[in-house]
Image (cartoon, rainbow, N blue to C red; front, side, top):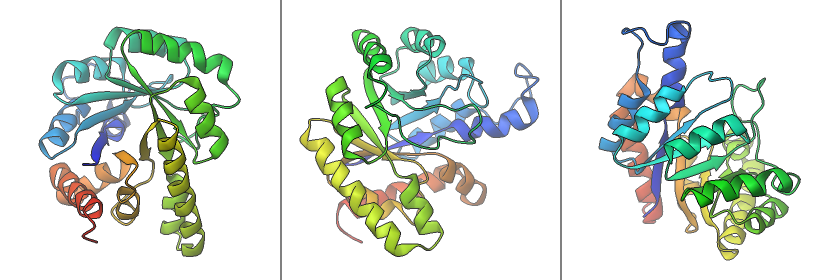
Length: 254
């Protein structure tokens, strides 16, 4: 069975649009923790949240509350920051996904450079693993990065699917097919090197089927699309439909 991780960052983004300067207001809503509980009831096997250095959406209090209240696993996304590492070691999520982080970006723009940041990543990964936290690395579907992730001793990789999803949205179907083939080869390589394979970024109803059909991919992490779709069908309904599409793809029904 393929797992679905729901990212609740953009529930917090909506809250921050009005309450960024009033985080302790009793009126501050919507609550990403409540969204996480809805996601679990709708079939999510995990909750993802990215605690950025600038706290642009999810805050420290959200992470502590998620740790306390959710029943599934907590996947904490974080950059290579000593400050955030201290929080991760205190919160002890089941999983940490290390991602690149640029203060000027709207969302994560690419994969982590595992091959070029070995001296930074190795001790960080070691500290997390020593605390009993499983480590995932968010990477582009490139052979050198996959090999570097395996050499660093990470348990998981999450393949960046943003380029493929953008090509589908823009109607560049030939380029999308080539990108999908690259993702397929990357998933096969990562699996052969003993890495558990996850995938995420930009996935929606029109792209999930092909990705969920990869037998090596054990988990998809999806956020922005589901939060947007919730406006039209409710968060639970949006997640249930994504779960249905994932399961049908895995079972070869589409």
